[in-house]
Length: 120
Image 1 (cartoon, helix red, strand yellow):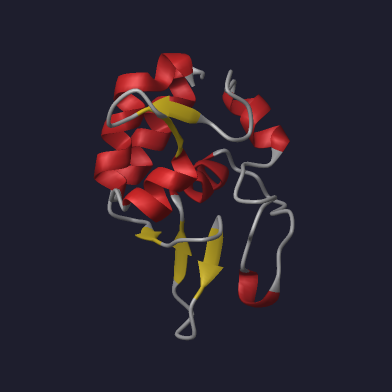
Image 2 (cartoon, one colour):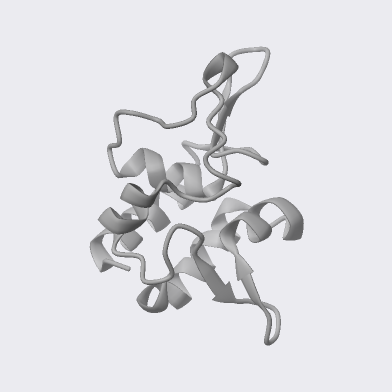
């Protein structure tokens, strides 16, 4: 992954500006609050103006919870649109899994990125 984008992603996740959501890249709740999964934050900081697969109320599902290919390419992700890291043992986990199933918060995910950005 490109270092400059990894550092921006880490900074954004640690900033407290983004509310964490699950099951889609970006969503809007009934009160109009926008929430992002960690990959949705990456989409946002790459200044992508067109969110693909946008649904009702600004929900962005992506393709089965993965990054749009152009974002992965722009970020220089070697692992492609479904980036994975070794986490919690010998098993590789996707960032969707870390965000949604393992339940890491954005600061914890930022730490994982900081440790592994070179191989993403």
